[in-house]
Length: 175
Image 1: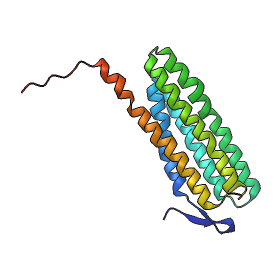
Image 2 (image 1 turned 60 degrees about the horizontal axis):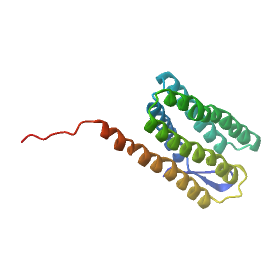
Image 3 (image 1 turned 30 degrees about the vertical axis):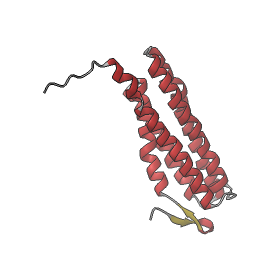
């Protein structure tokens, strides 16, 4: 089913963390490839991202409040290099490529990712952290953030072929 009951008889959807552990590194991979970043740097940022998801999971299942908040802080500490890489490192790489369309696209999609990913900790604080948000509201918030982050990101990345296809010569069909 993808969920279990944790302290306080609260439903916990562990499947969410499995999904994040797969999709968020793929988003970083896409951004790194768009920026033409070094594969080692991309892998390091992806590793930091997975560590962030694991720390968030451990914070969510922790029974002792001090341990819960410790894991939350650790996840934020590991999140900082991810944001830095997306905002500074990858951006500098794409700027050095001197492709205006690529720079514009990277600027838009990276801004979308950084803003939406920065909202996830607030949902965690209000739901798992303090318990002021119910499980339904938590699920709705995470679902909206997931749709905006992943679907809008994907649609924006697919549109990259619009300007790249203009560079290709038209294909002629011979019958």
